[in-house]
Length: 217
Image (cartoon, helix red, strand yellow):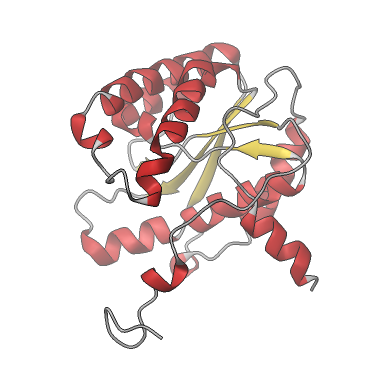
């Protein structure tokens, strides 16, 4: 296995917002190919209860984007959101750029030629910690694998969850059964430019604990 290629893929799969190419159609066969790969991800108890709802219809994409924009406006106007990180924190310093990028996506989400909603059979509201970990652990790795497969094929995507504030409305729009949980909304499009760079992250050693919380090496 070519570690350089694998590491490059893993460290440059970004949440793509401003560099999504809204003018270029995405072949359905390419999306299906990424889903085929995604279904090789782990699944709790081999349940394989996953589903991917692929939305290409323009009216439905607009309706989803409207739900997302309403939730986004509520989210960014929450004072707790803007005070999440102190200004001296790396994440606090990055927040204005992230907010600008997220605002752009909210304004243009309907233009993404494909929306993908990873879903999992079952509900988690009353499942408890173990139940929730099992349910989400059976779909989120597959969703991430989808994003990696898309990235390797020149497609950008962004992990978003704000539409889940209106999950029931989205389910009604798309005919998703009541006993199925939506977990994200991934806008998918070809990306502009040639490549992405690794992001600035907190020091990995500061979040690594050896044998006990707070124990460093």
